[in-house]
Length: 53
Image 1: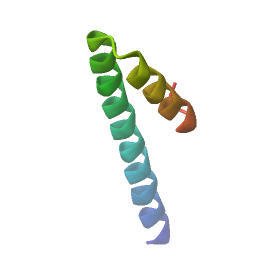
Image 2: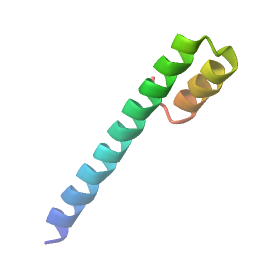
Image 3: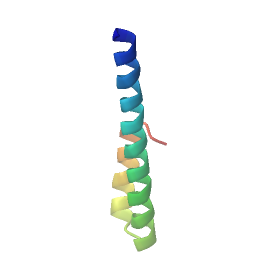
Image 4: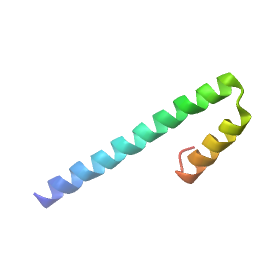
């Protein structure tokens, strides 16, 4: 049972990380489309902080 719980938690963590990555990509696309350089830099810094590159 403990191994099953670990697998569930690992999958949840991976899903959460993927959700963060997708959200960040969408936000970055929108910032680039609007030409907002300040926001682009902030989002790139966020990606680096989260190790999502």
